[in-house]
Length: 279
Image (tube, rainbow, N blue to C red):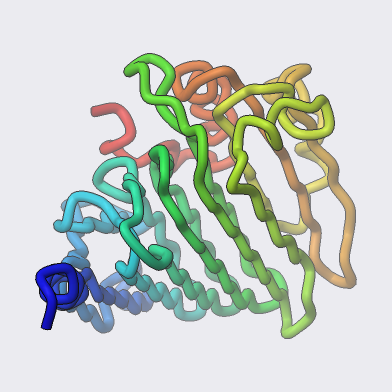
């Protein structure tokens, strides 16, 4: 085997292949752990709390992702239970030496239950290649708050994303019916795709916020006020499900958080934001 081949084989052996799964159920008046599984670099921690929702913190101990890495999370919230799931820190996707980094998220929320999926930002570095898939199944009447924020480089650190690949696929169902689907693709010329007004006008920080709840339409005016002029929000019903979708755009991560945090506080009610967001 050549030196280059040996290096390639060594890198392939060291790739992250991590899975974490959390199943919670309501028992004795509050949401409690039913099952927890973690493998490889995927870790799950549950800060102590006095009541619902149960809060879970997802950790990738590898410190980030690069080409060939695989990370998968599964969260199941049984009937009547309430959970809030976040990440310990921003997920960083570094330059790829070959292949895509992948993140697969599967959510299942039962009748009368609620789930707030509130990971911190994903940061894409120059030369990164990343594919993310989010699949969620909600029972009719279950509540959902799903947020994903993406930073195309870190301007404040002088880190510009010039070339990269990002694919983001969402499939969200309620009562077995598809209520939200989107496929986002950008690259390899990321700045060129972001620059037009139909993109982000050159802004490097974006967030998508999806709300599933019966009164979603009643939240629209407040959401639009918090989103501001660089973004937008719409609400409608899909069958029996109320749905609100908001997009936020900002020059950098700091500007994005200034508007995203008040929005999530409002949408998540008394539960507010996970504590790790303030660190």
